[in-house]
Length: 245
Ligand SMILES: [Zn+2]
Image (cartoon, rainbow, N blue to C red; front, side, top):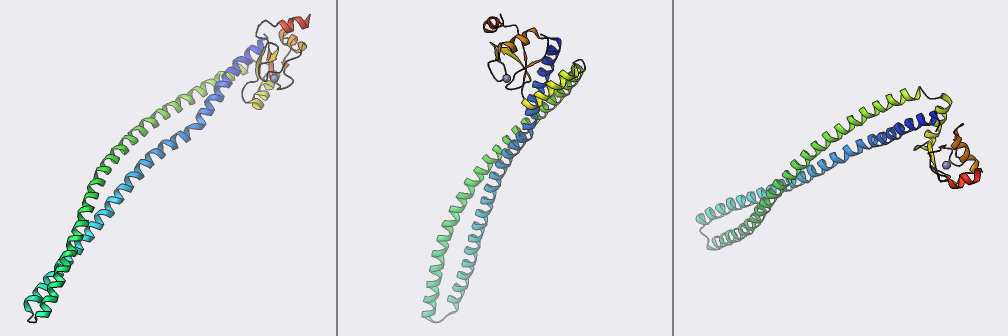
């Protein structure tokens, strides 16, 4: 293997890791959003329950007021009863009082239902508050983990870039620019080993002449299909051996 290829392989190794790290870094904002969304969802479930509880309480309060005004009305009718001298009017008032008392019973039944609902809601609110606390605590931990992961990745990227720069300085410029062109184009690997006479990148069966050239490693050999740089990794190549004879 030519020394240039050897150096480029090391550069490629750093580049592969760099690509991997950049891809992971790009996903981090989405991970953060997902965590925020979970916390927001728990918060809105709690808000919804609290609103329900508030409306239930308002409804109960309204019924309480209704009962209050009916009782005031009953008191008025009763004092009118005391004052009246007409039997008919007295009976009419008695009838009104009885009706109003029946209505009060009905309203008080509804009030009891609402009180029960309020109690249930209070229990649900307590449970949901606990869920929210847990979600928030978990979100906090996850955000810290992501933050640590992010800075570790950024640190590694800086280190890799520095290593890469130092290595690049020792490689023949035309080789390096060729490598970089292929890398930009391919986005995965630019230098691949020969695998049983095939290109290690696109798996094209290579002509024996190309295999032979790569073995001699006198010049840079590329795959005619994918354009990647080929190198001989030292494996036994019966087909190529035979063909080159
Ligand atoms: Zn290829």
